[in-house]
Every structure is written in C-alpha cells, then in structure tokens.
Image 1: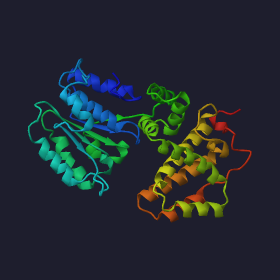
Image 2 (image 1 turned 120 degrees about the vertical axis):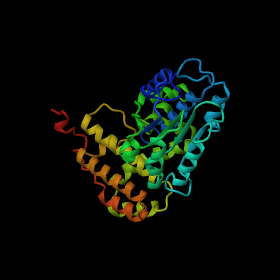
Image 3 (image 1 turned 60 degrees about the vertical axis):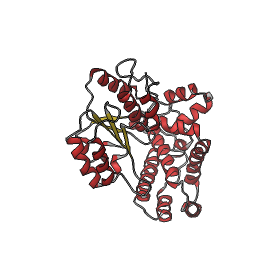
Image 4 (image 1 turned 180 degrees about the vertical axis):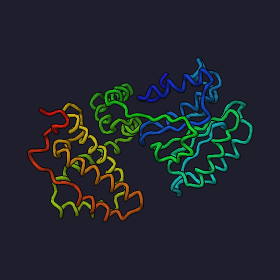
Length: 334
C-alpha cells in the first residue's frame, strides 16, 4: 500500500514498519518543498494510526468510522493546527489550546494524532511552548510536524523529532501516476515537468487548468524577459508590481533556472519544460538563479514589489549568443 502518495515510498514503508512493530516515535518532522506531499503523508499516517480495523499492521481498512473521518480532518482525535489567515505562522495560543486538548482523554478510546503545519513559520513563542509537549508527550499521542526544511526549524524542536525529508520524485514516476489517474500521456508529462519533482503540485495542476496555464506562461515569460532591453524589463516590473501571482511566477522562474544550472553541469539529456537552458551559459544561469532567489526572499520580507522586481530586472543577465549551449569543461566536456 502506498497510502495514496506519489513517490517517497521509503517514507511510507518506514512508518508502516514502525506501526507494525509498535515502535513509532512520539514526534516526527516531515520536511520538503511545498507540493512534495508533506500534508498527504501526515494525513495518511494519522489514518493508519487511528484506523479501527486495519487489515494488516501498518495499513488502514478504508471503511471504518476513523477512515471515513480522517481524510476530512473531522476525527475527534485528530488535531490539525495550521496558520490562521491573519497571522504569519502558528501562534502560541494555538499551541496552548492543543496542549489543553491533548491533556484530555481520547474521545474515541484510542490513540491521538496532532498535525502542526509549517512549524518553520511558527512564532518564537509557539515554538517554545511546543517544547513542553515534545519533552513530555501525553500517552498514546503522536505529533506530526511539517516544514520546508529542517534548517528552518528551531534546533530545540527538530532535535526532539524523527526527521523524514521527502525527496523530489522523478518526472517519469509522477507522469505515470498522473496518467493512471486518467490524464493523457502528453498532459501527464507536461504537468510532471512543470511540477519539478513535486507530485502534489502536479495533482493540483491536473485539477486546476488555470494553474497549469499560468505556470506554462511563466516559463515563456522568463525566456522573453531575458531577451528584453532594460526599458522593456522595467515596463514589466511596472506591470507586475500589483500582480497577486508575482511570488508564484518567480517560484517558477526559480525552478526553471535551477533546471538550467543542473542542465549545464550535468550535460544534455534531461527533459526540461522550456528553452531557458539554451539561452544561458552556466555563469548566467547561476546569476539569474541567485537574483530570482534574492527577489523572492525580499518579497517575503514585505519589500516593495516594484523596487524588488526592478532590481531583479537589473540583475538578470542578457544571453550571450554562441556560448549558451556549451557544457563546461569541469562538467566533463571534451
């Protein structure tokens, strides 16, 4: 059983074995980029823990009351904690309320699971309050924390968890899974390329054609922006300054430029979603990647969008024709 995940079967196998052997830890930290499947894995693990009639140790039956309630997060012994809409992260008040709930008896008479989403964005007070629960866990309680990267989580929190770092999933594996769900072969490969190793993102693009279309457009826009003059680039900055999808656009650029860098280092042969690698040499691709990353970080710190994008447009390289397709000698070129 794959628990409904695409890829990262090693993580499912590990958790299933621990359940079967009754060696589960009291806390896990599931890391990986957005769209990697952190939330799906946490919910699947919770379902396996709470299932009332597992057909085999470590699996779930899919028909009991718990299996009916967990996917919708309505099981009384599943506590789902995520950032309020008006906050930047989980708050200390949410953690204290969770502690109060976990101090009570199980409503279903079994174990309990608490999922805390994006603990890397939790307030300092919330992270400190969480330590008490991690250090003195209530009986039969499993805590599942998710985050983008273990390095972004306070060491005092991460050190008290078993870390499961989800890895990018190969394009072919994502495409096969998407095609098995009814997508055409061409469409499955397209969303798999755009997802860049993140299966949940691929599934969202299948469900939301507008999202897929935007992501395709962003790749085209990157190639066009690289070949524009400075005045035209500044016009783009003016156009995008109030675009609600600006961070999404730059995230796609980051993915594509990362692909370009890897393509230059590893040499030809990889399947890429756009022609960006053919426009830039290795040094240019790295420069563009760094500039895009710095812009995203600035926007997430509430920098002025227009100024941030204008700075990006200044920093983006202009392709030098003739050298872009060369593979660096250090990467094995003869």
